[in-house]
Image 1 (cartoon, rainbow, N blue to C red):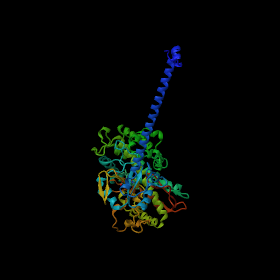
Image 2 (cartoon, rainbow, N blue to C red; image 1 turned 90 degrees about the vertical axis):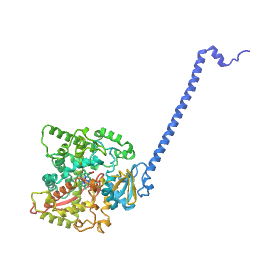
Image 3 (spheres, helix red, strand yellow; image 1 turned 30 degrees about the vertical axis):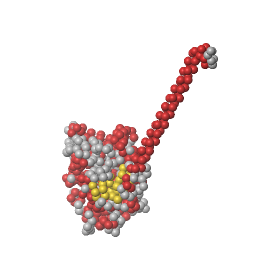
Length: 545
Ligand code: HEM
């Protein structure tokens, strides 16, 4: 038998190398298709995994946003991932006004979402009374801000702090607002008020925007009393623009969206922002940087033997100790001490809160005075009868009608109540509603302040006299400064500044309406302020001039 002579055999025998190459090529092709298969199946598995992951994420987010529905709580329809952020974060229509409008639609208790952050909005007075005052031990924490770490740390300031950490910061901060401290600052405030009114006088040809002048005024006061900037120059204070940038910044920004949609990433996000903040030009971080330098400089001066100036920085530095001696947690037990970063944090928060709120409040007052000449007339009578040359804090108490005007204005425009939020720290039941640990509450003070059941049929009228009348209304129905142990720490300073400024203004001028006075446009993200308040000032030519 002859072997079958096929091509392969012949080629193999005649050209063994060629055959080997051929076999190699075949194997390679085989290997190749195996490898391709493996890659393809790997990719398929990955796609499957990704799809399942996306499905799980979708399921998670659509489930989170049914939280209120499942509890039978009404509220606006949320969008997937973002909840109601689109509506609530408009600079042109501040959050407080959106909540007020939703209250009209959904009632005194409803829910909404910022990403996956779930808020219960309350404007029912009895329920607020329980949350803010009576059950404070169940609601001692303010809801975490969008850009706040999950645990209190060295950089946590008074507004954010919780538990015993907050108690310590609050106790140390309260020293700044005692009668004794406020008494000392009256001359500084008076000087700033005169400078601001001088500025208005110089510029009052035609009409002025009072908000701009009051911003200069409050910044001048806070720079001098908090930051010891004795030579601060009104109308040339660099902090005015930095703080304007902090407050005028729209919330709708990637920086804010990320922590709301991915709250589990907040700590990493904060670390990233803190390390890149300088390059990103975030105004808040820039301000913090400036203050860090100011506090460090003062610390050096003190170590070099300079005497204490008695301002807030010195007061806080008196309590400063090495960071290792301070605990920061919610149940820490450090007393009467501050770390360096906490000193900076306290100054930062007093600077910001002291600048914006009081200037906005004053500008609202001028808006009302321009619109209500009869109120202005009555206020003027009180001012003219107030004949104290050397102003003292006790004498300011005599300006009762002025206080009514300020309060009535704050009742209409409770500008800072975005900060009146609480987090349930221990489950409880109020008026039949079961609060779970972690539930966040936002108060709708704007609706509360216009509630006819509380304020009467004329609730929507601007009538300062209501504050002088006998009433069965609870004191806590007025919440422009919040309520309970966490209410505004700077309230007395705010009244003091406002009274002194109005005294100076009313002595010299009559405030008149112009064609640009009405309507005022309300804007804001952290507070609700008028875009501008245009009025005309006319010299009174009285005994004061
Ligand atoms: C008209 C002026 C002001 C208004 C309307 C106002 C309003 C408020 C409101 C509504 C709160 C939240 C209270 C709560 O959650 O119950 C608050 C808290 C606070 N305010 Fe004011 N404020 C004003 C002036 C000031 C001033 C002048 C300072 C300091 C210089 C200040 C410092 C603070 C601080 C530090 C907190 C946080 C308190 C804490 O959590 O313990 N405020 N303010």
